[in-house]
Length: 208
Ligand code: SF4
Image (cartoon, rainbow, N blue to C red; front, side, top):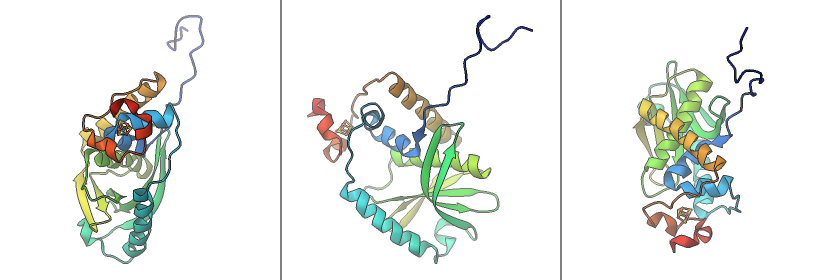
């Protein structure tokens, strides 16, 4: 019987695993594509910033308090909270550590903690979208809403996780893999204000 797996006379090539990416890559790529390029194509040393360190301390404190708080601030009557969840999908080639998950009988709600004064941006939503894909696969329950917990303000901001956002995340994963495979150096973001506090600015000589 004739095989449909490839050209006649040749064995079908083994299925290639997708290049492993992290949910934070989705966030970084939406902020500035070059950051992801530097991390994968030209690995450069990365020092933890004050913002990262301070955010981690605040997050530990909130997680300690969360255990005693009611779920009303999330608009929920009941649910189980899980912290620091490592999630992975072989199908998507994606993994990440989710700060908090609220699981109810019929739905899951990812919660991402952020140390920022600037509110929630598009790149944060991509991160939530990435976690939502992993949670849906892992727990077999839909994710329709996620939260960005603003640590400085002490506020949990809800976001609708649409099918369009999930598809946009999958398309972005394909785009990132193609950039890495072809070693394509991306253009900087149009908003140059992003570069001012960027930890990679020493490598972007062309923009100054
Ligand atoms: S300095 Fe600007 S262009 Fe370079 S990585 Fe940072 S944000 Fe991107």
